Amino acid sequence: MSNFMPRNEHTVERIIRVVVGLIGISLVFVGPKSLWGLVGLLPLVTGLIGTCPLYTILGISTCSTKST
Image (cartoon, rainbow, N blue to C red):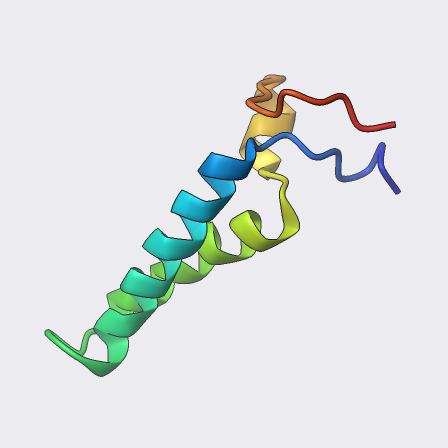
């Protein structure tokens, strides 16, 4: 499973993604109340699982530890 979805996000980046995702999702309920806030699901999910599919495709990793 680790080869399928390797961890490629640093812990600080994961926290930032979760916060940005929650702010984005909150736009659905408060503020402009637009469905564009659902775009916040992407950084929220990638932050929670610790891997970004785009990073995997491009071969980028901000994670300091190597997952085995």
